[in-house]
Amino acid sequence: MMKLTVIGAVIAIGLVAALGLYLFGLGLRNVGRAAASSRWPRTAGKVVRSDTREQHDVDRKTGDASVIYSADTVIQYEVAGKQYSTNLIHFGQTLGSGDASEAELQRLRYPVGGEVSVSYHPSQPWIAAARPGLHAEAFWLPGAGLAFLLPAALAMFVFLTLFRAAPQQQRDADDFKQSVETAIENGRRGIAPPDIPFRPPKDESDAIAPVVAGLLAAVFCGLGILALSGGAQRLWRGAASQHWPSVEGKVLFSRVNTSETRDSDQRRDTTFSPQFVYTYEVGGAKHFNNRRRFGHIEGSGEDWAEDIAARYEIGKAVRVYYFPADPDVAVLEPGNNSEGLWLPGVGLVALLFGLATLIWIVPAVAK
Image (cartoon, rainbow, N blue to C red):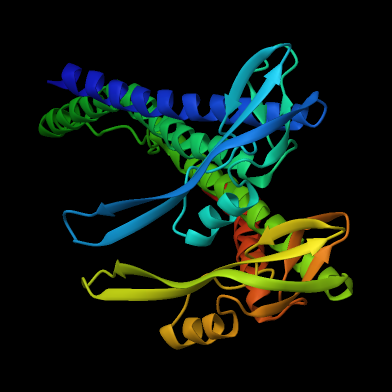
């Protein structure tokens, strides 16, 4: 029975580790291709398919329904007389999200028949992307791989430590039992036991606590750095957007999305989020965006969402502030407010907690 338990544990941990390695390796490959794609040759392409899709999922246990929106874009291009096609806008792009405006935004940016510049791999021209360069989404896949790898490594370490410690603990227990029986027998004979100071046996499982604490601290530090860097970038753009040039724009898509979740008491909690897409022209080129404010809250109460949606109804003229170096980066409400402090604030707390754990807690439990 013990042998079957060991084999089952090793197989389960191995499967989780294999999945983590696969995702992490795939993510690193995407990051490498994204970084190199800015130096790849470019060619003209044409959009042959562009539409949006909805995927409805229902949780059988809770009955909660969720909708994932995705854009299906296919671009054809030619390299050395051969035709190729790609559905990749940039490396690391997500397959879909709960935000309908993201899918609508891609459909508008890449309409059927539109001409697009495509960057392709010089030795593998079937690998190509419409927007070369390193994007933040490219780090999600290696992050997901680490989310599987780190717990698998910790579980394997704990399992091996306890497995190695078990025989020694059994021997210590047998020795203790023998010493008690010897002391009792000597007491019956009138032999005084020697005065030997008690030394507790060394337990290899004591090494688990500092490793667990160290791993937990590393995870919090990593998450804190990601949230802090992302939040700091949003705050910088929010402050800079107050000095960006502006043009007249028009709202093309507007809706209020609802999302339902259940708490521990099975009570439904509904979150409302306004979603919209607007268009604007810079230098004679048409651009599209869906950002209202940098660092805004994604969802809240119904009145809050309806109030924002009413300000940006379909067909309404809006003032768009755009980044001069990249006009695709734009915002309707420049500047920062308290909403923009949530992400960097959470990141700072997580980072400080991780550092405090590394500096004080890990050395304390390792003694």
